[in-house]
Image 1 (cartoon, rainbow, N blue to C red):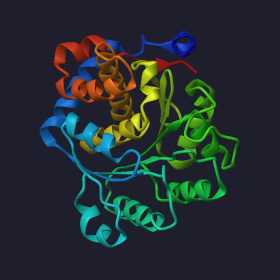
Image 2 (tube, rainbow, N blue to C red):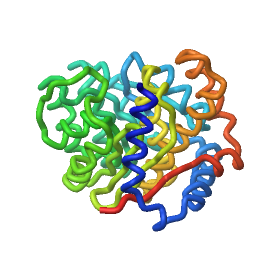
Image 3 (cartoon, helix red, strand yellow):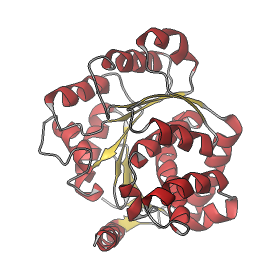
Length: 294
């Protein structure tokens, strides 16, 4: 049933997509250029994230060619954060002790014109969590990446019934909320789902790669947020394209890993291996990104 619902959601989204505006092969070649740039430059990405996701986020960055730094102590922020190429903040296991470090790091990134990405995990689950995310939005993230329910909670600034970190909404359900959030914050907003939606408030694109079983591996969403940070680090003036390409490439790695996997545990391993081993021909043949009509 899960695969069927994913297929139905993809079909519905594709019916709204217009891939004539920018041919898919242009996106594919951009994807290879972006990945090779990350591999060549190896941007340093600071991740202040949750205990559940640290391992997979760090290994995702390493397998893509970036350099992860999992520093979260407030006292280290003034010395370290100005040196990074991008910052990734994830509120998954948020605590009052960690929040000052997140705010300080985001403030340093913003003041030094370094891109930073926010992952508002379960933003609508509690007032504390929602208010923390709303405070972080004031520090001008470059990109916000969440699931449909998270983006809708941020857009409405309201606590809502949730399934924890899982979404109760498809990405396409949150398209208008994403556009509104992008316009109000100035950030690029990405909504993960069967089709990943990316918008700057005006333009909307969809990344159509990935497999349903990726939802059965904890921290895949967190990890693609870190990958977005690496991509935006090497192309900060084109955050929308960098975000869409990161989502698509991570999805391609998932598709390749799924062809070798027997279940979620082996998919996790093959996902990392596939991202590490991606070659030009494979990537160009698999990337699928489309532009959405209004």
